[in-house]
Structures are given as C-alpha cells and as structure tokens.
Length: 616
Ligand code: ACM
Ligand code: ZN
Image 1 (cartoon, rainbow, N blue to C red):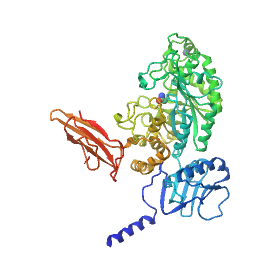
Image 2: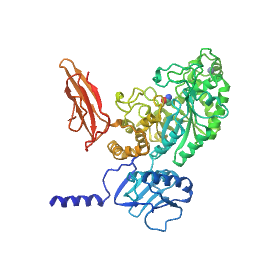
Image 3: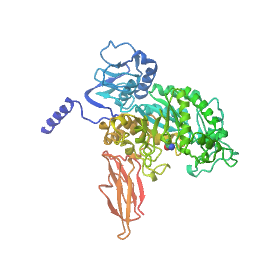
Image 4: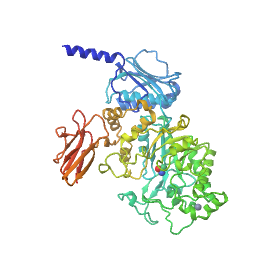
C-alpha cells in the first residue's frame, strides 16, 4: 500500500510542470514542453488556414492527413467561430518566431500553429505530423505539447548525383516529399557529370541524345570498367525533360524545398564532350569521345581557351537559369584534370595573353568568365571549393568539401565567401555506413550514422563574424555505387535525418542517445510507412580481434554506435539470442572460432543483422 501511494505522488509531480519524458521529434526542436491530456483528432476536426496559403498548402495538408491517419479533413479560411476541435494556422508577429520557425501548441480543445511565413507553417505541420501516433484510425489522441522552434541554418541541403546513375522523376519526387518532412529545404541536383548529362537543353539536343546514354557495364565494379567503344550500343541512362523539371520544382516549392541545379564544368564534362567534341582542347585521333561508363574518365575537361566554350556555356546557363527559379546556380568547378590544357594551343594562348602563371590560374580565369555569365542571369554562382584557387570568384558561394591538405571550411568564410559545409568526412553518405563486409559495395570508407550526427559544421577556429558566413550544411550522395532506387534510399536513410538535425537543431539540444532511440521508437516505422528502404546498419556490431599466436588465443572486442542496447554473442556457431553471452568487455577465445554477435533491445528483440566473423 505504501508503495502504491508513492507511485501516485510521483506521477502527479511529473505532470505538474510539463512531462519530462523523452520526445521523438527529428530534427529536435528548440524547446518542447509536454503537457497532460490529448487533442482528439477525428474527421469532424476543422482546419483553418490563412487565405494566402490555401492554394499551395491546403492540398498538401489534406493529402498528408489522409495518408497519415486515414481521416479526410476540411479546410476553411475564416477565423474559427467554434471554440473546440480545430487546427488553426495563425500568422504571428511574435519576435521569437523567425523565418521558417513556428510555435506548435497542442491542447485538449485545439491545435495552433503560429508562423510568419509559408515555410514556418510547413515546418510546424511536419512537427505536428510527428506528434500524431502512427496508424490509421477514426479517432486519434495527440498528446498535448507546446513546441517553440526555429532553424539553426537557412541552408539544410541534400545533394543527389543522378549522372552516375539516372534516377527517374518519380523517385526524385518521393525523396523531396520525405526529406522535406524532416525540414530539409534545399535539393541540390547534380545533373551532369562524366557518366551522363541529365537535363534537356533545347539549343543543344545532342546533350541528351548522345550525352544521356552510355554503354552497359552493369555488374562490373565501377572502377574496373573499360571505356565504351564508338560501335557499341548505348542503352544505359536517361534524362529529365524541361517539363519534368518544372514539375519537380513546383512539387518541391509546395514542400518548402528550393531546387538548385548543378552543371559541373570545366572538369567532369565527359558526357558534354562526347556530345560536342569540338569543345575539347584538340582533335586527338586517340581521344575517346564516348560518355564515360565508370572507371577513370580521362579527357573530360572543356577547353578553357576556345571562345566557343564560353558561348556554349552561356546558352546552356541561360536555359538553366530560366528553368530554375532558385537564385543559385551551381557550376561545379571541382577536380578539373588540366593535363590537356598544358598541351592545348588555345589554352596556352589564353594563358599568355592574360598573364596567367599556371593552369590553376587558367581555371580561375575560366571560373571568372562563367561567374560573369551566371551573374548576367541574375543568379549567384555556387562552386565546389576548388574555385577558391587562383584569383577566386568574387560574389560566389562556396561548397566546402575538401579537408586535410585543404581547409576551405576556414579559407572560404575568412575570405568573405558565403559557405555551405559539405565535408567529405562527415557528409558524403556515398560512403558505407556499417562494417564494410556487411554492407553493399561502396567506397572503402565507413561513415556511420553517429559520425554524420556528431558533425559540427561551424569550425571552432572561425570568429563570430566569419561563422556568420556559414549558410548551412549539406549531405551528398554521389552515385557511383548506387544503381538502384532501393540502394539510393538505403544510403540516404537514416543518415539524411542525422544531417537534417545537424542543419536544423541548435547544438545544445542535440543528443545522440535521444536521436537513435527516436529512430527505433518512431522514425524507422515512419520511413517504412513511406515505403523507404531504410538501412538498419546502426545496429550492426563492429568486431575487432587480435590473434595471440604464442598463447593460441583470440582477443575479441565488440563495439556498437548505439546507446541503451546490449550485445549478445556466441562462439558455437548458433545465432545469438538474449540467452547467449552478454558482451561486457573484451574477451578471449580460441583462434578460428566462428563468432556471431547481435544487438538486442530491452524487449529482447534482435535489432539488426547478425555480425559473423571467423577469428583467423
Ligand atoms: C567533389 O566531391 N568532387 C565535389
Ligand atoms: Zn584547350
């Protein structure tokens, strides 16, 4: 009896000043205060939405309510006269609500989302969606809560490379839909590269007639592929028509996502050169003018000396600029192989005429000319950080991807450039995400979910003034090893969610333990409901071991990136369950043993795949 009284007392205490229970929102909001009680959502619940947002937001809201809950709700623009059972989107002047930010207040009688702009309403609605329990029902209890939330960064990006492997329009729409529900607001579309040109350009039809198609090397590892011959059929590829691109842009806009096109020049241009070989440095009978199929792509730089190169790019950039409403246009600028420039009479002539010291300065000359073309279209040029070399590119925005020998994450903001962090160490999710031997083929580097999550985009070396130039953070999925839609999704999720939290949430509210627990409790199910092929590599056990020949012993060390779960293992060849040995610390066994280990939650469920390793 005594125990029971104590229990009741504790519950009352917990409810009196907001519930302290963990919440499962991703990205984690600025402030979350859970309250006692619920709002009951039924098909009689009314939505009130300001008139100016009706056209764009209403179809989306109604569709998502139906998708998530099965309920078909009605929307009105009038101020509510009823005093209960409604959801109101309310324009606010409150200073604490910033652009894209919102306040979500769920109480017994009503739900209020306050915001200043479309983006704020969209984002507030995403948080509301995450507050609704999963599952279709006629009456749904949504726990009361007050959430105040603003983004840390304005740039919360995801890049998708559709050149190495073309992905159809429907796939792009699906990703924008899901990513935007995690408050990602920039979709960087890497549309062209050596292995395929993916955007219709009306003035230059060869770009998609020839440049979008390549020889078939399916099944051959990417870096072992032999170049295509002139004669062989070119059956692998695809491209987006301008009409399709307009559809993607409109779909993204309704989801608060800006679409930024990338036309990668002067390097990575093999597909362009295959389509228009006259833009290559010289007529080399030995050069291969076919779209690259994988492997190395030599002879892939546009001639920086021919005036026709710039005329061509002006036409292309003009069409791209007219098609995409974004104020940004990405021109690549990365990894340009300048071997041919050193031998090319056109390039050398321009170098001499302009007093350029070397080919680095010639690249800078090229980039500055392209920058003029882009700014003439009233766009801001974005380039990968190689465009900082030579004389740089005044007015451009930098994507800082390199680390180590180069430090563009410091150089770009220090030199006054608006900078987007795309660290290849923390943000290149083309790298595998679990023990390599358990993952599909990819670059031989592991980028686990926790590493993406623990990234801090603003380097501590920057002053407050310099740090203000960091526009945000972006995660990049390069496509060499992701031929299928399923594989792309596997690489994107859940790491894009970790990146979303890096981009949205203030460091002080970030918590890896909470994030990974929210994935298990809520988001894996939510992603699966959206038919996403999500990776569960977070639950793979990482084994390491050493063999002590002298004592005929294997010393085994097991690791997990998770918190709050337990590793169980066997050495008798059987699959582990929670009745196997619980891993506490490193242990010794005999060499050649087959070790099997798995990660289990406190209900005793195996969470991921079993790690299997022969200790030899
Ligand atoms: C890059 O990774 N080449 C931007
Ligand atoms: Zn040249």
